Image (cartoon, rainbow, N blue to C red):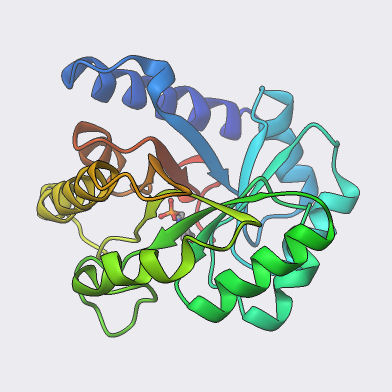
Length: 229
Ligand SMILES: *Cc1c(COP(=O)(O)O)cnc(C)c1O
């Protein structure tokens, strides 16, 4: 075993701290989610052994398999597209679902959560750049969407999530992160029942510093920790 993952984690941690410093934020206002999709358990366990307890997966079955095999003090974040017919399987297995973008999915998640006597934290995925290839609610439909799902008592709408465009230069995504932050602030100000807007999940390996500067509370880093997939 080499120190590849430890060194990556140290480097990422330093970059997070610097971005926090630069933007006058405290380090603990930013939560790092290690995106472990496609990576085998022994690799993920190296990150675990270096203190990581939050992991992100984008496929239901893969997350459930890893959840079964790995230590129980891990919190699993479901960050990928979730089909509504798989909603039941994930209830109680994930601490937050980042990718709610349809009323039917929200309804199913709520129903199965209530059946299990729990409330599931969710984020609404926003397609902030209007990319045809991306999931998410269009920014102009967001308010109406949130008002369609806020009465589902089995979910708590904790905030917003986006996957910004792929770019070589993270400065290009600043405008999108800024728009996300503004949407979040505006919706929070409406004081809608069951809508908290205290979380903003944005920023990946290629753009997390800019996301932090623009207000991300959760960053999702895969390649920067585990290497290429
Ligand atoms: C894969 C993935 C990430 C991590 O991407 P990296 O560029 O490897 O850091 C973050 N968010 C989502 C939704 C993903 O699917």
